[in-house]
Amino acid sequence: MGKKVGFGVVGIGNMGNSHVISMNILPHTELVAVCDRNPDAFNKIDEKVRAKIKCTTDYEEFLQTPGLEAVLVAVPHYDHPDLAIAAMEHGKHVIVEKPIAVHKAEAERLIAAARKHPELIKSAMFNQRTLPAHVKLKQLIDSGALGKIFRVNWIITDWFRSQMYYDSGDWRATWGGEGGGVLLNQCPHQLDLMQWFFGMPKMVSARVCIGKYHDIEVEDDVNAYLEYADGMTGNFITSTGEAPGTNRLEVMADWGRVILENGKIEFKRNEIPCLEYTRTSTKSFGKQPFWDCSVNLPPAVPGRSGHQLVIENVANAIINGTELIAPLEEGINGLELGNAILMSGLLKQDVVLPVDSAKYAGMLADLVKNSTHSRKVIRQADNSSFSSSH
Ligand SMILES: NC(=O)c1ccc[n+]([C@@H]2O[C@H](COP(=O)([O-])OP(=O)(O)OC[C@H]3O[C@@H](n4cnc5c(N)ncnc54)[C@H](O)[C@@H]3O)[C@@H](O)[C@H]2O)c1
Image (cartoon, rainbow, N blue to C red; front, top):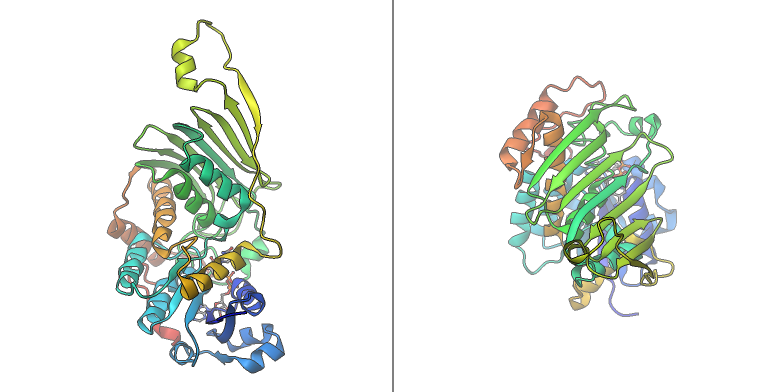
């Protein structure tokens, strides 16, 4: 069986509890401790498991647990940087749930702290990077098989959430508790994938709707237009109010059109690259001939969720230096993209990237200060601290 890495999970909510179960299934992880500010959270854990591990509301005590080598941070987003930094300062490897922070300045602080610990493995929980269709699309793009990409369109509206979901936690969908809505909670996966596939845009222009479908003070509907330095353009459309929703990524490239939908890739491949055909065709209304190509996806790993693959990957990185699927440092890009879209939508202005992180932090701090939402959890957006509970 080989070595097992001693893992701890902080934040035993919906996601943290699922990670706890995974730690007990995976071959190279051993759960040694859990931490939650609410002791009732520990009741979710199987009694037999609980009897063997440390359960504590005190993060410092958690970090002192004998055998603890790596910490998975699964608390609400504002506390991700502080808890991850404290873990690294105690010599622990970290996996940080998405988004790695609420705004770019906080991600910069987290990454600066991570760079002080080159001896540690630091990962973000971008489990969607492991999906076979995403792995394949990344290969197609990076190998040059699509040629120059002209336009990308992502409609990701299948994140439907009910009012009850938003009411299930007082941190949810508040500026002070979560720092945003669909861009901060549901879409960090697609925002990460956007930058993983296509890099970062140079400009974003967006419209966002606050509480269009729900009684919330943050955005639940977004239309964004993106411009890239090489002339590529993008559209990113998301919502938590539409049902049935769509999850469709369309990539228009010189060698044809790729559609990623329902976990499959459809590739209509031009016989001649589009730009060449445009230049050389002798027909005024000619249509570019293309082939319908079947794209074989890499096999899914049986019996493993994407989250489990990321945890397993981190355990393997700790044990034998396996390359990370989702290095922590890359987590700043999707976050910056989400911040840029939100800023553009709220200010009704184009936002040029890189985002001015101090300006964004100031804008968010004002939103937190002026929040009148009854369920708000007041946090200083530009000076977050978790000391209240630890
Ligand atoms: N990767 C994914 O697919 C995925 C899916 C869902 C949630 N998440 C992320 O996981 C995180 C948690 O989401 P959730 O839905 O599990 O939330 P949740 O509200 O269900 O659980 C959060 C838990 O953290 C505890 N907590 C809060 N602050 C704490 C602190 N400072 N110290 C210790 N415990 C603390 C709470 O008591 C609660 O038990 C969020 O950042 C979310 O974005 C990721």
